[in-house]
Image 1 (cartoon, rainbow, N blue to C red):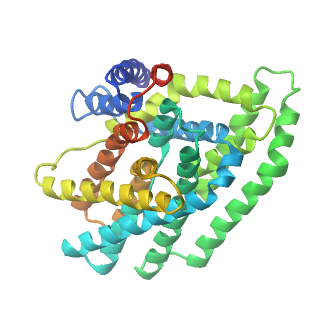
Image 2 (cartoon, one colour; image 1 turned 135 degrees about the vertical axis):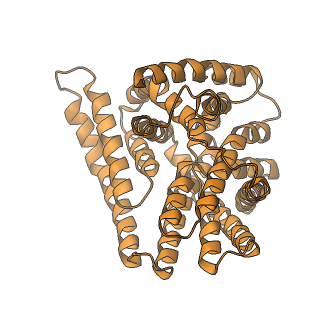
Length: 388
């Protein structure tokens, strides 16, 4: 059954991606939408199985690893101030609006704060692919977005731990902070001293593709360590990519990882987002979904844009950066699951927020496409088709 589902996903995602590009949109939009069609909601050809989730997880880890490999570290350093501003402002706006919405809906203090925090989360895995297709991943805006995503993830997780410690959850705030600090201290040291050494040791081995194997080992171990310490796995894989980008093996690894990733794992990740969508009860809660979707989109767009504008970006570029921060993705889904487990979200609210997360994910690519450029050049069109 899995083999059939993989074949269906690969065929459908490539065709849908190509159609999306021909219609002037990033290919990722077509892949997201075709997932809804393939899933239980419409055709039922693909089901949300545990093994499909694992393959999807590998896909997003590899996607962020590629983003790290293609990061210009000098540009990344230059945009540190902008990234911090975008990351912080992109949390404050949705946190405030989400809290007000929660109080208006009759939620308790902690439930309203939790809703605000959930809406503050960002997952730029969708934005990364869109930036690649638009040729903007290595730009100043791209570096700002990636830096802001790391800051956003860390701050939201710390704030969540702080809230849970007061809301009765079994959380040791000091331990949470210590784990985060330990993660960044250790991976920085490993990136500086160990990663180049590992690649040099693997390179002369008399086995096929030893360097790419070493790179994937580093990627997966960094991702695992990040998840173990409470930081999103995608942050770990991104840092692994950045570390390898500073070595002489960057070009070889980038080319081969892209081949592996875009052939199988990344299409499964994009399509599986649509497959997991559940629309039961959507009519009864349509007004709530619409309200929270507007809050989720506007708050990140405006918050991120203000953060970028305060550090010197023109308004259009600032709005484009804000748009790239809109998608909540798997980070918000993880937080929602924590809320459900700790009775900070009802079953109905959990179902509503799943749809809201899907909405933010689907609207992000076309908004970025529109804001990053008035129209694509022929070169950009060719790049989009290549990634379809």
